[in-house]
Image (cartoon, rainbow, N blue to C red; front, top):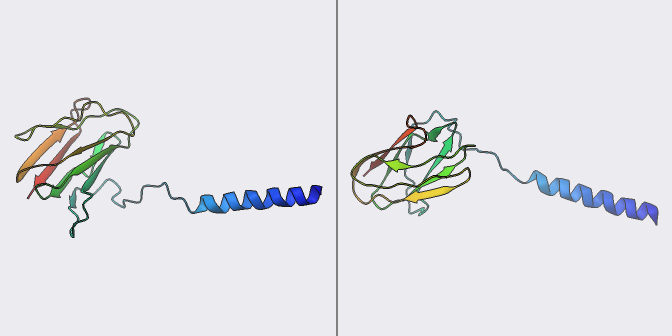
Length: 129
């Protein structure tokens, strides 16, 4: 009976280990922080464009979207940030703690510059077509 219990525990532990191997929590964006522009997805993906905050930078720093297409920011950093516009279309995320998300949908063509009020050297650009 004791051997059977050990065998069941061993099988359960192996099953958990194998199940954990299928998970991928890494950031596979492949841009390494070096990419400066992301083109909006074609074909009605509907999700918009993603911008991450890492190492007190917006990644990517510049995105191109169509009017009416959302930009989605995620604070993947260990410190708080903001997403604050500096131009004709006004928006402000307020303080975003680590893990927080913010979305903005530009309405008209043009260029929108934005920055972090907490880290003024952290800047980004949205080119709206």
